[in-house]
Length: 232
Image (tube, rainbow, N blue to C red; front, side, top):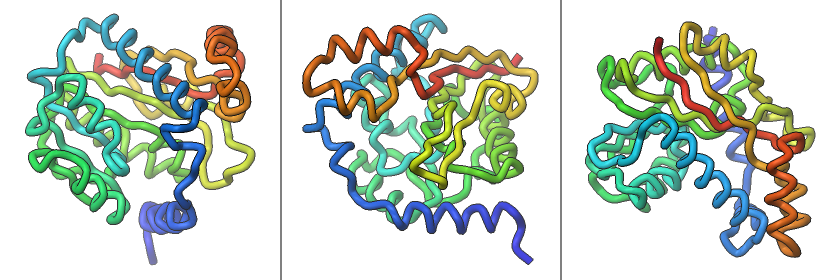
C-alpha cells in the first residue's frame, strides 16, 4: 500500500501535467509584470528589515524551484550560482531549470520530504507556492521539518504562498497564518499580506498601475503571505 506522501506526490504530478503554458504569465502581460515587480520590491523591504544587505556569501536552497525563475533572480541580485541548490518533484521542470540556470547551480529531482543535504547547511531556504500545492497535511509537515533541519541557526526561510483558496483550482489550497505557525512551531514568524488578487490586477493593470498599487496598499484584496521564518 502506498503511503499518503506517495499518493499525494502522484496527485501533484497529475495536477501539473494538466497545466499548459498560460499567456497570463507572459512578461508582455501588464498584470503579470505588476505582480512580479511588486513582489520583488516587498522581498527587499522584508529582507532589509532582517539585516540582509547582500547575498554574496549566502548558501541558498529553493524548495519546488520549478523552471528556476527565482534562482535566476537571486543570481541577478548578487547570489553566487555555486552557492545555490534547488529541488523539484517534477522531472520536466528540473530539466528546464538546468537548461536555463548556470551550470554551477545544483538542481535535483526529488521530494522535499526527504532532503539529502546535511543539517544547518543553508543561510536562506526559499519556497514559493509549494505548500498550497500540497493537500496532504502530513506531507506539508515533513517538508517544513526538512526545511528547518537544513536551515542554519541564524538562517531564514523565505515564504510566499496563498492564504486564500482559489475557487477555480481545486488542486491548490490556501495556507493561512494559523497553519503556518503549526507547521513551524517554536519559530519566529513575520508575515506581510501582499499581492493584489491576480484577476483584479489583470483587469486593471493595462489601464492603471497606480490603481493596482493603491488597492494593494489596502491589504483587504491581497491573496498571499510573504514572510520570513527563523528558529528560536
